[in-house]
Length: 515
Image (cartoon, rainbow, N blue to C red; front, side, top):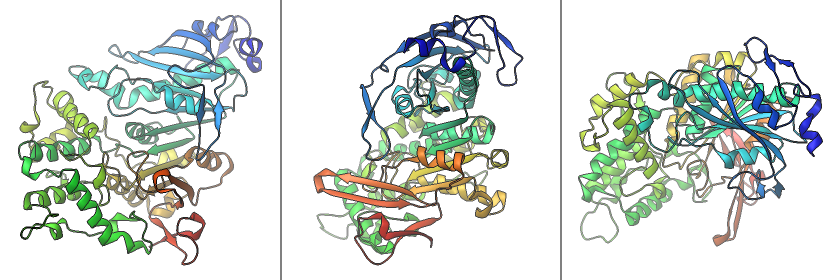
């Protein structure tokens, strides 16, 4: 194995004094001994390689890892672990890692995303790509820790987090790959969910040449809108305990939603295939007398607020609420704890620049306007111009769980609809950009609907063989109920429709159709 690492595929590092072309930069001289460790001598613009070492197991990760739906565990291969620091601005300090399989490289490169404001390198996601044979990279986006305090007085660091770190990491990674393997990757991919989904959408919008294919899961593309929505609901519930929906009330509400809307898709299965069709009003649960199970007037209003969302009073843009069917993921203070913490940090450090700012100071009418204007599309990824990405042959798969309680799935469908409108209709997008909504799925995974699927293989086939994913198989296994269920995920706005015969737990008995 050592001989493979020293001279992989006749790589440029096999010998002294080789020359390397990187990105749009001039050729830079490579003086390295030809080993993994020799990559520390590689010179790339704005990049300092701080470590390069052969590893047999990723840090903090088990020796084998499952990949894809219902997979067998795969062994983790020996790899060259490279760490680097990127400084595209005088205030940048972006850390990244790239892992390079020592043998059986599949010729592909994958960058993986992050979550929330987390300033960490995503070793788990890197491992999942590594065992599939990818060279894989991740970045801490220019800071450490989960808080947005890094942005206070540091606008360049906010830009790094917003979009620059991912792009710079991709550029550096391709240079390192070329040096180690003796050539560029055949195909480059990005794969992220949540904040990683936002990073994915930003890449498609800003840097259409970075990746051949992009997977954007549950993207926080309306970063400021989600922050304002979570803070808005928490403000109401912080000061009015009687308006809170406890666990019992959330279960009552969820059961009522299913009772009202579950059969709209023709199948009673405990999930809503298309919550957009559900017009359930929480008012039907309002207490009329001495009922044991009902909602107070204030609790009804809370549920309505969570569903409805709000509007930016200046731009008139809708800021989406959560979908009907997501109630079991709510908390006593509304949206998830992560959404609320991210929202507080957004306004405290990045909007008002005041570490002492509290939620009780929040004013929707002024703060949502200020948030969008100050962000100026740095963290938001709402640009509908995907034409450059599409023109280059790029393929974009976006997915979102309809029962996501952390990032509004309606924000995802709203964005898709806006892109379709901007580019001339769905037919203009269908060959390059497809959205898959997962009924009953929570945030990135989990939930009562089929939530295990293999977007990576679907994207590879689309990019490399031109096989567009007309549907993507998804499964769920719930051992407590001894239930295995499969369903096709359909390209929005198509939905899975029961054919009328056969077991409704078997995906083959459903077809993707426009309603």
